[in-house]
Length: 607
Image 1 (cartoon, rainbow, N blue to C red):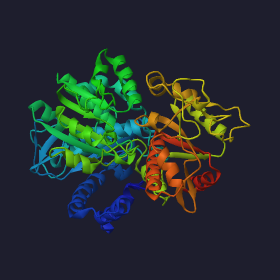
Image 2: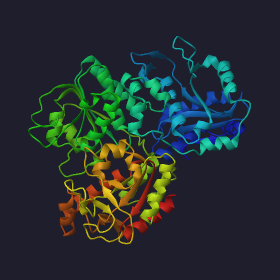
Image 3: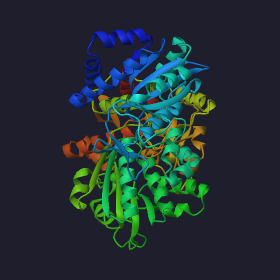
Image 4: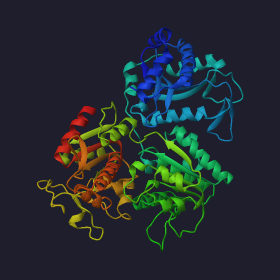
């Protein structure tokens, strides 16, 4: 459990009066994060919980949640009070022990006790929005939020959500109005046990909130559950400020799968375009380029011209980070920058006044891809390095589980993410169809085995990934009627599949190259015979059709240790991508029997 929950006000009061409560929170913190919270946080808890204790003394029985981790991003709300007025109610509370606070030029930051801090009103709006739209059953509750500045008396920085220490009576009246007269423990448990949900995938979110994103209306986005977290907001605001003030700089931003890199990149692109700056968002991934172009043109014709390739491999038509590209931008944003070569990095650092690189070196797919921290540091001029720690798409517990699984040391976390294994691919597809029937977007993704694909002939046997006969000779599906073909044409297939909803037909599947950067509510992963579990470790299996690692795969199986290690490393990166495409759930069917038994037993223990 990542928080403290009391379903009885008196139990909280008794604990507070009889134990070192800040010490209790410190122990919980150490268990959760495997690090010490430090003296500053310990003292902060002493002050904030002390003031909360005074407030709660004046309330009847209520539910109290302390240090609630906001879904997906990892930030913690100081307290949530649960009660019932006309309907069940949640009040999200952010408490600050600052002694002085003043405005800055940004609406989203303040200067507090001499330091630049996220505006607590934006912060609590963001928490409120993430809970409203990101927690199962939260729609059953009236939800509100407030900020308590418990070491400050009221001054000019007033806001309807801010309460100062001399506003104690007004604060209690506000809480009573929304939380009295009662508390329904059974209804409260719906929130307490609610799973993380994400109501919109990336493309749907951009379509819905396009105007807010381009206007930089962060408060509006926060109230809808799509505001940037503080670790995203800091670099976003810094980049926009540099752009406004004509400052040249390189930013290098690292984040794991689903940490919000692409959403942040699109925020920067649309905001800079509104500022009438020469702006570009660049990829090497042709599937992502075509899908983004289609989506943006649907919003505003002509926006698609802002989406470019950073590398094309064609000297006569270079990408913006290739040799020979001559246009200079105000801002160039490079997503999936781990796929860059050293030469791309050097060129990209000079193609714009501000160059922003989003990367995840755990998603490197080939030996020629060199977008990693040491190369950005070496080939860019004094880059600003930023780490996005959150794993927003599927939650931190599942993300850590995937890393542990592929690292050969699986964990068994207590997680709400829906993770299932199927011995029968037909049953997995049936379960995904049920999700489609519940208006959940579903998609099939598969390891690059059994069939290499044939772009020139759509009817080729090489395009059949699941079925019989397969070009590899694998006969697992001989006695089934299931036939699933590869997505092949980047310009025609991928936008309808990922953006237009054709993935719900469940008759085609994407390889890692067609899945990287995309997401669905539920994904079915077809785990192939390339990476298999033998003797307590991951080893190379019997088949691989991935052109980037095929040579290393077969050389490694023939005894070349360097090639072997390269193939294993690249395959693990591929499976990390495939296993993290699902927002709400991931289903697995494995084509290797022994690996399947291992995964099945592991998933049963986890669930």
